[in-house]
Image 1: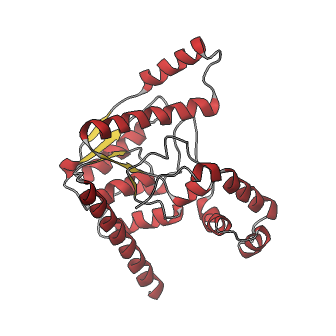
Image 2: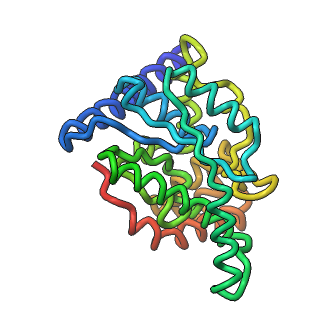
Image 3: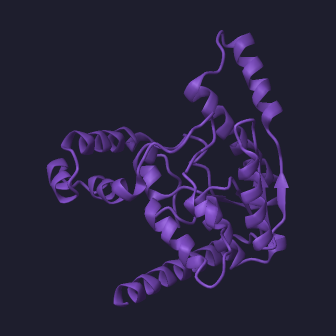
Length: 264
């Protein structure tokens, strides 16, 4: 019971701190609206839910930008989330835009878009759309990145990096899930299947996040703060080679991390 109470107060404090940060950021810059890419995933769901506790729904612009890789279930979950928050979900399919990039690549760049390039183009198309909206209407782009993904290289330069403000940048992925459960403490606001479903960026067929977040989040956090590989492997009863692979990902990600915009 004591642990449950401590967890409750921890996430109440986190939620309150994030809301105050958002309020102050908007006020200082004279911005009244936010725009969020809603993808059915846990990160954007939490960001949308938090924003709805700060702003009137008319000042929240949720954008769903599917390609052929986004399932009907993803749309339904995104729509259910938006409905629960009384936020209008605008659907902007980007499949034709993606196909134009595919044609351009074959015609002028001598090869088809494949694998990482094909996935990153999808992400950057969404970047352009969000930033155009921000520029045209003076809206604040809310970034959906969390600390674990930032530490593990699992993000796209000039896509995940864009933001006016990143609400959950200092939360491990497991903490994002716990915050979602906390937001749902009185009633289901974030659809439960968003919490339970295997995380995926849906940038290719059958793609899922390549991590066991329950296993990896705490070790990754310690490795990112200079803890020794052997120490972390022993502490979490993990294979040392696997822990070293996590450390290598963190090291490779540093050039990306160095480009992260200032976080208020």
